[in-house]
Every structure is written in structure tokens, then in C-alpha cells.
Length: 398
Image 1 (cartoon, rainbow, N blue to C red):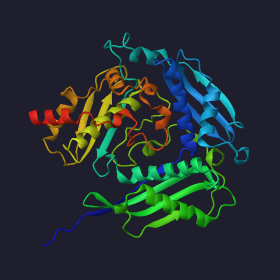
Image 2: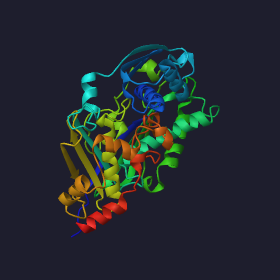
Image 3: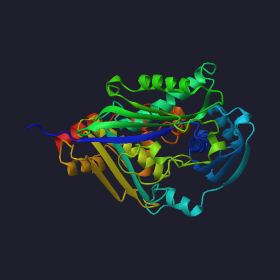
Image 4: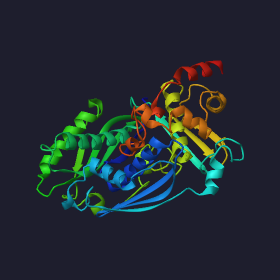
């Protein structure tokens, strides 16, 4: 008697760089980049709000850097493509309000090595962070969120590279992809949803053709073998968009930023936070460790959780879950991650290992992370798989 195969569907979404929340994420991270470029010891917790022709920068920043905050915000908005005053939000037309002050000294004394209880850099806050990897795509990312990102990213590339040909497209967009899984593996795309802001004179059929073309470009043919349902601008019209259509805030797209709903999330947002904030840096380290475990072949999928107390350097706990796919004893794998000398989850060591204070020296920026996902793109140091051989050696020794 043949075994009945397990089948389920899973859906993830992405949003474009012109989505109101992503506009805010990018501004907050551009502020962080500007501070770190002059002062790598900057402490930054920058929140942005965007609505109709208004940008508000708020938060806590302690830095020696001399930054033109308003100009940073306007440059980001211009780079995204909001340059038309007629659509309710533009780089030159928006008012910019500044509501910034310095970091609380109560937080600073727990994070600074010379004043923390352990005499080394403590965690910038309490909380738990997660990292995830799976071997279902070459990027070791869940397929639904990876290809949702690729759809809106490609549409933005076309809009910017060929403005005359794609003159109807405006910056705001969303995508959503549903995959059918059989026995835990993605086998085909069943549904694609794309909502894209456009000019009033755009033919609907034109956008449907563009979306289908892009899907075939960015999703491997092996996943496009079935009959796919396409829903393109399903309301029929998406002219009013961006911050004019929906107020944006930093940190509201944490599932889009991570794994599309696969695995767990500690709840902390990333953008606008310097790497002393473990919400960000420890989540990157968890991804780094999980990805190397999967890349080494020790597991088909892996999720790592780490927890901290504010001002304390060493993690309170670390958990490794391979969902029954581990090739060695899972407790031994966790011991390798925590005590094997391959990964160090103390905040200062995370920052050093991943070069988080000096991204510009390594060809990436925090603003780069703020659209199309923080994970699964090769330019980021936490995506390296340079610990594979060390993990294999440690597993063999164990």
C-alpha cells in the first residue's frame, strides 16, 4: 500500500520599497548609516512616520556625527521614486519634522562595556530573537517569502531602469505567493497576488501581462508547472498609494522582514536600531548560525532562539530546533552552537564577527536591508556560509 503524501499550502507576502512602512524603514536605516559613517560608536533608535506630504523623525540618537537629518530623509524618498508632487507625497514637497533626543543614560550604562555589570558590552534590551534556514531554496530561505520579495523587487527595477516603458508604475506595491507543499517540500506555485500603484490612465491588462512576465523571470520554472491563479490589482484600481494613501511607520513589517510567517519571531523590529540593540544584531547572528547548519548538511531546516537580559552580555538561553531533520543528536548540535567556539552570541562579539558597526567598508548598508527582506540576499555578512567546515569538524568530533 503506497504512503499517502502530506499536502499543505503556505502563503507569504512582501511589499515594495515604496510601501509606506518601508519608506519609513529606509529613512530610519539611512539615518543609522549616516551616523555610523562618521561615528561607529553611535547609538541610534530612530523611528519615522510618513503620511500625506509629511515626514516625522523621532527617537533617541547619541552620536558625534554631524548629520543633515532632513536631507537624509528627502534623499531616501527621492531614491525610491517619490518625485511627483501630484501624488500627495514627494521628496521636495513633504514637510519634515524632527523630534530627536539622546539615548537614556540608564540604558547606556548597561550597554557600555566600562559601566555594565559584567565589564563587557551588555545586551541593549531584554527579549528573545530567532533565526531560521531551510534547504528548500538555494538561498536557504522559505520559498513563499523569497519569491514574494523577488517579484516586487523586479518590478521596482523595471520601473527605475525603463521609466518610459513602465511609465504607469508608481512606487507602492505588494506581492503575495502561495506554494503547495508535498511532504514538506515546495512543489509548485498555486496563487500570485500583486497590487501595484499606477497612474490613472494605465490599462489593467498591461499590468497583468507585466506581472506574469516578471513571475516567469524570478521564480524557477520547476515551480510554475501547474495552473496559477493570478490576482493583479484585485480591487480594480490603485491610483492613490504610498504615504498619501496609508500612513507608514518604522517597524511594522517584521514578518516581511524575516521569514514570511515561517518559524517564530521575537517581536522586535530591526530598522533604525544600531547593532547594540540585540533585537537586530542577535537576530542576524541566529540566521548566520542557522544558515551555516543547514548549509553544512547537519539539518534540512533549523531555527535558533536566543534570549537576553538588558546589560548582560551572555545569553540567558539558546535553543536549536531542527524539526526532526538533524543528522546528529540535537542536544549535541545545540552544545556546538553555544560552546563550540564557532559562534559567539555576546553582543560585542556579534558586532565584531559580522562587521555591524562599519557596513560601508564591506559594501553594504543598513538601508539596503530595509526593503526586500533582511535575509536571503548575498551582500549581507550574516548570509555567509563560512562556518560549514568548522561545523562538520565539530559534529564529527562529537
